[in-house]
Amino acid sequence: MRLGRLASVHIGIDFTRTGSMRVVGVSRGAVVFETDSPAKSDDLLESLEECRMCSAAPFFSESILMELTPPPLPAKKVERILPSLLDIQLPFPASECMYVFSKGHATYKAHAMRTADLKAFLAKLAEAKCNPARVVPPAAAVWARALAEIPPSSENEVRALFICEEDYTLLITGKGPEPGAQSVYKTGSEEHARRLRLALGTIPEDMVCICAGSRGESAKTSLLQLDTVNSKNIRVPDSPAFFMARALAFDSMVNSGKRGDLNLRTGALMHDAGRRSEAAPLIRLCAVMAVCAIFITSYSAFTFSRSSSRADSSGENLRSEINAVAGYDVKPRGSAGVQVALEAAGQNVDPAVEVYAANSIKEALSEIALLAQQHSITLHHISLTHEGLTASASTARSSSIDEFISAVKSSGIRAECTEAPAEKKDGSFGFFVHPAKL
Amino acid sequence: MKTQTAEKTDKRIAALAVLSAVWALSILLSVWFAAKTNAANRITERNNELLQRLAPAVISKKKYDEAQAKIVRHVMAAEEDASTISILEEKFPGAQPDSIKESTEIRETTGLRMRTSFMKWKSVEIETLSNIISELESGSNPYRLYAISITPSRRDNIVEAEAEFISFTKPKTP
Image (cartoon, rainbow over all chains, first blue to last red; front, side):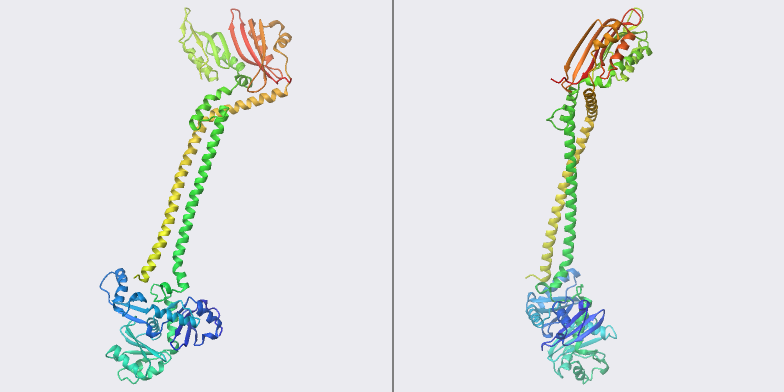
């Protein structure tokens, strides 16, 4: 048998106590294969060994279904007390069990299995080279499948579902979307009717009996002998021997990894694929946060490094400018260094070089002569050096003095009149000009 | 007795604690880097302010250095001109100064020789003085007027004058 691309196929494994195995593959809502000899296909064997989309159900007798009725509390609180309620009802400690809960209308259903039994079951599967990612309670899977394949005529239709195998039969009774109760018994022709009466007390007339499993047809035959059940209501699904495997495959397709997943392989017994997929969101979150942290820290470090190098460079630039202006290596740094440099700046300047380069004295002399004429100033003596103008002069109008001094200053010649002009006998005003201080 | 859910919650809490610690550490580091960046920016701003204060002095210094370099280049390439005495004797025989002093000194900043010529006239025509200045400033390695003092006399266009000229020449090789 060549199955090709099994990567997208959900597989249900029905493993009975006798050691026989029925395997069903489901893809996109349709059965793609059914086989009771998986060893014939290498692809299938490979998938059964590691497939994360494989589901199996424990032996009927090892699976426990209980109804829990919690007090009227908020859902979150109820979820916290459910393990304690289960612990009270179980004949052994809940800590020795793997369990899952499903919510009904007002009650909760607890599906439990002893951890030791689950370990032994997984060991048996391992011997048959099977390592399913999910081990789901058989009652939940087959009840949902029965509802899908044989839809109820009304919401409150009472149903009895027989999964009848060579050694044991699983009877599930209830109404609505959740199974009500289950019982397991040794398969025998008289036993079905007796167990049905035990489970329901009075058998309703419109009750629907569904007989599946390898001995489904014989269960139907024995149920037909009951007067209380309408023969039309005794149904056998298509391919009844593969019903359980089919139910598991569909359960894998519908519920795997979802919130309502009833997988008993949790905690220490979790399949590697489940562990990986459970850790994936956290790992993704960690990775995203780590990347963000690295980015933020790196960006901060980069900004700091850039600013620091800019500060160093500006400091170095300032130091070299201070030294250049001062003409020697100035020890004080910062504003003190600038002050020292500005004070030392003039000391390295040779006035002879400045005068020679600018040839300013000759030009200044011409400028002063012109300005004196313009402002009606009579120059009695004039002395001009690189330090500025020294002169004695007179004028008929005292206001001309300030105008003349301002004009001289505007020409870039350092000059000032420190003394008040003296009025002469002839009515003119005499004044002196000195080089202005820097 | 711990339930499966409790064990799972414990692991999640531990993972979240580690994550939070890493985040807190990265935030702390970022805050520390931000503080350091801020301090570095303040230093840069302060340095830039000081550079602005220093800028006029830097510009003057640059101009001075350029002028000095230009003089040095010119002087090293030019031939030494005649002395002011010989120029005046040759060009202005009728306007000889009453006194003239020539001196030479090595300028420390440039390493060049600076010739100084100080002249004094008790009376000289203002136009002649102007011509003398122009003549001395027109050589290939010219003199420059460094200081001048003029006192007009009672006569028109005649002044009493003192003038100091400078000129740079290359250092004499031994």
